[in-house]
Length: 216
Image 1: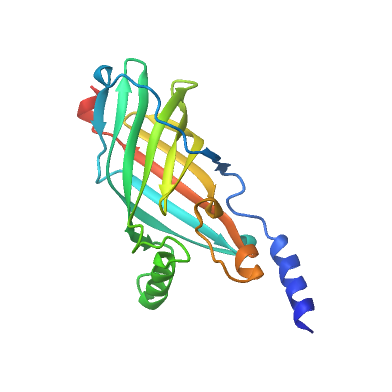
Image 2: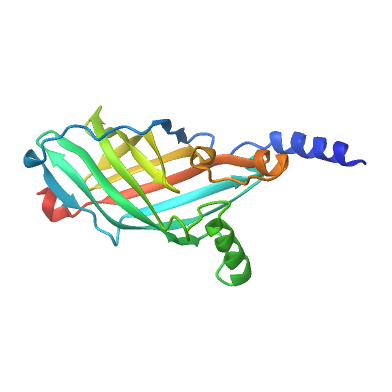
């Protein structure tokens, strides 16, 4: 079989695989927005519990034919709260802390290779962009536990506004959403296959755990 025929079969096969993250909400992406005008004198600043706040990632390859996932550490952060509830906040992410959680620790070489690949300039380019951040501009409360979060996400010094749904239960705010990595130039600049056969979406699962004592 010639190369064109093989490529055609590869595309057809990959398109028949259901994407494992198809049920996850896709964040609404817009241009960077200015911080909402908030009277800081009327707000409480509540720090995040850094031991319990978590950020997990998942990337899918070959249009759902395989995936990898892991964690990246939140290094510092806080939420802002007024009499109506949470209204803003900010947290920073240490991009050099990227770890792989779906490869057994008994296979150190694949872990090392994938970690270095993610840190390379083709993806997160951590040598030049060691930190990312999310600054929350607005939080809308639709029901007692259902939130709509909007804020500026900065990766590789590129900032775009994203909006997604979140859930608040007690002192934890959690969300699961997708972003298009091409919006932040987290992508190969190589062949057609590099740009097309690797899924554009990155899935994030986040849990922001707040200092419970400050919520009393």
